[in-house]
Length: 345
Image 1 (cartoon, rainbow, N blue to C red):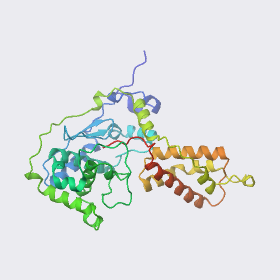
Image 2 (image 1 turned 135 degrees about the horizontal axis):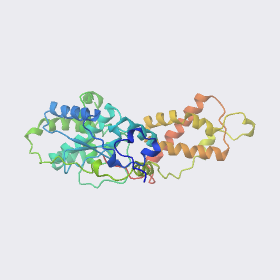
Image 3 (image 1 turned 120 degrees about the vertical axis):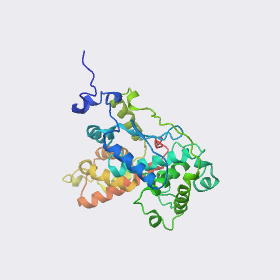
Image 4 (image 1 turned 30 degrees about the vertical axis):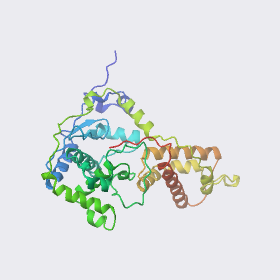
C-alpha cells in the first residue's frame, strides 16, 4: 500500500504530490517562524499605545479572527514555510501577507476587530455615528466608491467600505501603524474625524472595562483533513468569477482582423507575452486579485483567437491601450452581481 505523504517528507515533494497532502499533516506552526516576530511587533505597537492586550496567533487555512470568542488571529498555513509559499504563488498567483509589510497590515486590521469586541466599542453612540451600526448584516457584495474620502485606504478593494466593523478595523490599522503619518495623509478628509476619534478612544481604553476573552484556537490546522488540492480547488473557484461581459468591440479598437496584416503578431500571442506584466500592473491599479485578472485575460485571449485578431503597431502603445481596457473591465467587475461573495477578514 502506498504511504500517504506526511510531515516528515512533504517539503521535498513535487507540486502534484504535495497537493495530495492533508493540511493537518503539514504540522506547521507560528512558533519559530518569521510570523512569530510579526505578532510580537504588533503586540509591541499595542503596548506602546498603552493598550493592554496581547494577541496570539495560530495556523489555519485562511486569514481570519473570531473576536467574539478569542483575542487570537488565524494565519494561513502557506506563510509558515517557503515551500508552501511557492505553491501558493503557483496556485493563486500571489501570496497574501507574504512579506513582513503586508503581514503587518493584515495583523493590525485583525487587532482592530479584537479591540472592538473586547471593549464592546460598537455600543457607543459616537462609534455608531462615525462608523454605523455593527449589527448590520454583512453583505454578499458591496459597491465601493474608490474616490470617497470618508474612509481610510488600507487593505485592497476599498475594504473599509464593506461594513461598519471593517471601517473601524481599517481605521484602527492605519492609526496603529507608527509610520502611517495619518494626520498628514488624511488632512482634509472626512475620514480624519474617525482617526481622531480612534486616537482619543485608545487614550481612554485603559479606563474601560474589558470583556474577558479566552486564548482559543478556532479551526487550527491540526484539525483540517482536506488536502491541499481540495483547498486550492475551492480557492480558485472563489476567484474565478462568472463575468458574462463580451469584449469584442473593445478588442477591435486595439487590434485588427485586416487580412493584409498577416505578418503582424497575433493579438493572442501579444497578450500571452505580456500577461504577467499586465496582471501585476492592473492589480496594483485596481486592487483586484491576480487570479481574477488571470480569468479575464484568458477569456480575452480566447476571443482574440476566435476573432483572428492581429496586433500591429508599436508594442508600447498596444501595451498601454490593453492595460486601460483590462482596467476598465476589472472596474466593471467590481460592481457586477456575478462577483462571488467576498470573505470578511
